[in-house]
Image 1 (cartoon, rainbow, N blue to C red):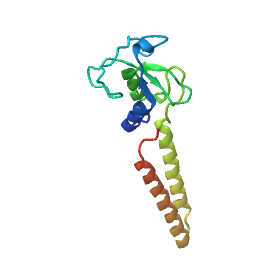
Image 2 (tube, rainbow, N blue to C red):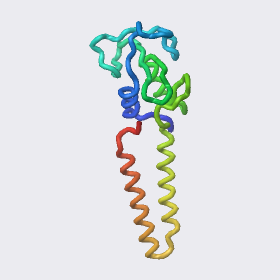
Image 3 (cartoon, rainbow, N blue to C red):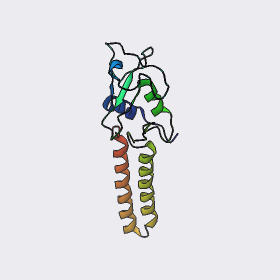
Image 4 (cartoon, one colour):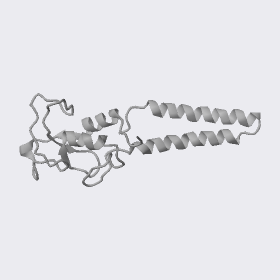
Length: 153
């Protein structure tokens, strides 16, 4: 699936860009705008953003993601991101982008691979072959570095 958000990216987003909100502190609605279920207060010993089985749906606010200040149920938010849809990386209310679409990184890497193959195809004599292969090796090393980087949020 091209729109699968990798688990480290999801975990990074939930840890660094959401914060639990107290139900009495909600100004507008005490229900999730995605599933319309009422929010509950999490257990005081609960550690955000983990969501073990049996943890009630509690409100989290998006922060440090552009202009999106929306509040969702923690589990609904994770389901939205894991839905593998082209919009799973965006707010379902305002469509603000929370993190780059998974496909955009893939497209960038495919473009770099295509550039390496084009350089290889242009090689005509031995000196050009050596130069082209050196460029291919450099591009492939760059790709390896990018693939080994931690999440891209």
